[in-house]
Amino acid sequence: MSFQGFFLAQNGLWRAPSSSLRGKCTEHNTFSLSTGNIIGSGIFISPKGVLEHSGSVGLALIVWVLGGCIAALGSLCYAELGVTIPKSGGDYSYVTEIFGGLVGFLLLWSAVLIMYPTTLAVIALTFSNYVLQPVFPDCVPPYMATRLLSTVCLLFLTWVNCSSVRLATRIQDVFTVGKLAALGLIIVVGLVQICKGNYEGLTPQVAFEFSRTPSVGQVALAFLQASFAFSGWNFLNYVTEEVVEPRQNLPRAIYISIPLVTFVYTLTNIAYFSAMSPEELLSSNAVAVTFGEKLLGMFSVIMPISVALSTFGGINGYLFTSSRLCFSGAREGHLPSLLAMIHFKNCTPIPALLCCCTATIVILCIGETHNLINYVSFINYLSYGVTIAGLLYYRWKKPKLYRPIKVNLLVPVTYLMFWALLLGFSLYSEPVVCGVGLVIMLTGVPVYFLGVYWKSKPKCICDFIESATYVAQRLCFVVFPQFDPIEISPIEEWPDKSSNILSGKS
Image 1 (cartoon, rainbow, N blue to C red):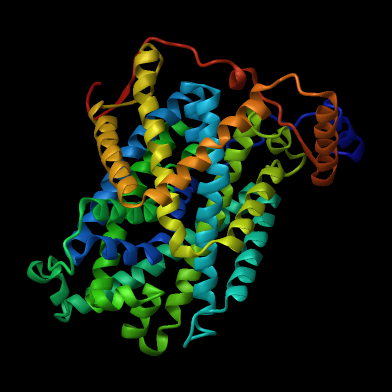
Image 2: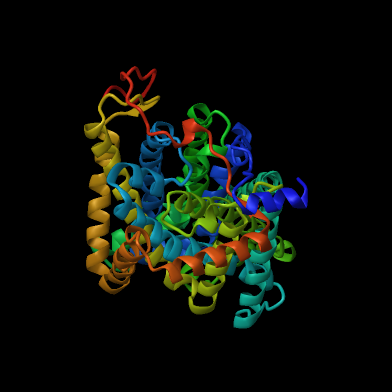
C-alpha cells in the first residue's frame, strides 16, 4: 500500500481486508497456543501455594487432579460458546452478547485492569528470576534487575507480535515444545528417583500426614493456587476469528491439551515430592531450581534455563490473546476506537498490544509475585462462572439457536456448583484480597455510564478524542479492518439440528 493510500485510510476511505485477522491459526497452532498458554509459570510457582494451603502431599496431588477436571468441564462449556457465538474476545464477547453491555464491560474492565496485566507480570517476573538465578546463586536476584529484564522481555515480544502474527505463532510452537521438554526432564528424573526406591513421601500413610488440619477455606485457596497454573485453558476463545475451521479445531485442541496438561502437572508434582520433603519445597523460592540442584548436580543450570524458556513462551501466548480482548472491546465500542485498529500492512493490532504491554509494566513496578496469585485467580474464577451461567441463560433465551456443539446440562451445572463453593469459601478465608477485586470490578460501573452509555458528550471532549486518535493512528500506521456483513449481522436462530452433541442430550 502506498503512503497516499495510508492517508486515504486516515479519512475512512480505505480499510484493511476483512480476513486480516482470521485464518492464521491451523489445527497445529491451536494445540500449541492452547497448551502454551496453560503451561507458563504456574507449575513452577503454584506447587508451593497448593501444598501450603492443603497441608499434605496427598491432598495437594488430589487438588492438582481435580483442578484439571474442573478446567476440562469449563473448557467444554467454552467450546459450545465458541462455536455458537463465533467472535474473538472470549468471555467478554459471550457475556456482552448474552447479558448486554454493562455486564460485558465490567468483565472487560476487570480483565484489562487486573487479570491479564497481573498474569503477564507474574510470568515475566518468573522468567527474570529464573534467568538471573545462575548469576546470583547464593541470594535473591536484585529487585531492579528482575524488573528491568522482565520489561525488556515484554518489549521484545510486544515488538514480535506487532510485526507478524505468523512469527508470533511460530515462536509459540517452538517454545511450547521447549516447555514440555523442561517438564519432561523433571518427570523423567523424578521417575528415576521413584524406581530407585525414593518414594517414601508418596506412600499413603506419609502423604496424608497433615502438618495441620486444613479448613474448607484453606482447601479453596489451594484450588485457587492450582487454578493459576491451569489459567489459559479458555484463551483459544479469544482468537476464534483467527482459527481455521474453529468448529473442528477449537474443541479438538481442548480435548487434547487439557488432559495432557493435567497429566503433566500431576507427574511433575509427583517428581517434586520424590526429591524434596514438604518442608524443603515450602522453603524454596524456586522449586524447579531446588529440584535441579538436588538431582542434576553440575547440570543443574539446565533447569533455570528450561523454566526461563517456558515462561518466555507463556508471555508470548498471553500477549497474543490478551491484545485480542482489547481489540474486541474496542470493536464493540467499550474501549477507545484506536484499540480496534490494525497495522495497514502486517494486520496486527498494534495499539491493543501496546496497551497490554504498558499496563503490565505498571503492574511490574507495584506488585510481588506470590501476593498476586490469589488475587488474579479469584477474578478469573468469577469471570468463568458468569460466562458459564450465561451459557445456561442463552439456552433458555434462544432455544432454537443452531449449536454445532451442545454439552450435557450436567457439565455447566457441575462447574457452577463447584464455582459457587470455591468463591464463597475463598471470600470467607481472604475477604480483603477478594473484596478488593470486587471493588475494582465495580468501579467500572461509573466508567461505563460516563464513557460508553453517555453519547451526547461535549464537543470539546469529542474533538480531543478525535485528534488524539488521529495522531496515534498516524504514529502506528493503523486503520480499521473491514468486516464482512456476516461478521456484523446479529446471530440468527436456526432449527436445533446439532450434529455434534457432547456427553448426551441436554
